Length: 389
Image (cartoon, rainbow, N blue to C red; front, top):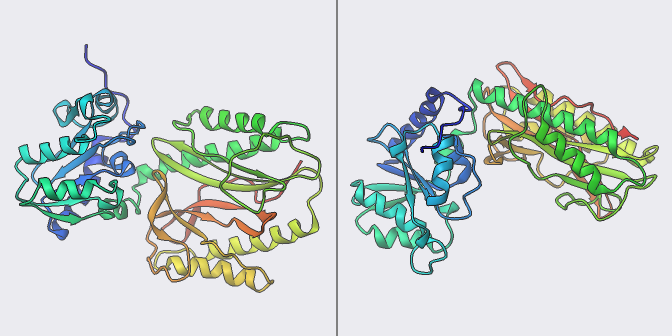
């Protein structure tokens, strides 16, 4: 009995729009076929979100063919049949004998298909940055008559500008983020285990908001005193205490998309230092948002923030944010000095203003935003305050 197709996150026309944009870039780059191995680009072009990218897999986009072909592990093929928009004959599975095999692996199956489909003497684009160290040599040695072109960021840059359908999903993600931040404020109390608070946050991220559940559990970073001077460690085997500061980063997720959000909490009255940093950072955040408009650059946004906080003796060493959407980080544009990427409507970013000042002290606040036709739409809506508990 065949597996049924799941309700699609987007209509077929949306995926075909994306594939058409990729094909236009392929023509500009002079490639006949493109091997997509980045899991987030596969999601973007097919709707596939299953967590199978720890073994080789690839989406092959051809100039000649309307739909891409997905080559992946046999036990994951039913997930592709269930989730993607493509016809069944576009899903090709490779056998389990290629798993844990020191001589051959799933990339051999991808190359076999390239040869069988008649592309062995063509110019082939490959996302070389996403491949393990030995895989590029395999493509070059097994396809000696092909010209292998490094197309590592071809599809990724296309993702930077979202469709209105994508923006609608990111608004749903943002509502989940807001709900999780507010739930954290309800459950963080002296004597409560950090793990129990995380359980409540994760529960909210899964239950979702406005009738829209979360479809993936993203990382949650909770840094409580004395660990507020760092950012990417998990919760501790500890309890919250009176006087503790808590820095929280999380993000609602739907259909592979995310909306990041950071807020700071204080059990009891915040210290004078924390209050001052908060006020300066919020002023900088507002200046950054005012700088966002079509035609401005990523550098303009970052510099507006840094100038504002600099006037009050504060600086931020890390960048001010990054392109945001599928897979949390879209590794293209950064909100930092010198990034001349021009903002256009429907670009989305995580304006990440976490500021880690000393080894034992930092502060976090952020928003996920969309560049609108005339300025900015902030998708997240949690109060811009220190949550006093």
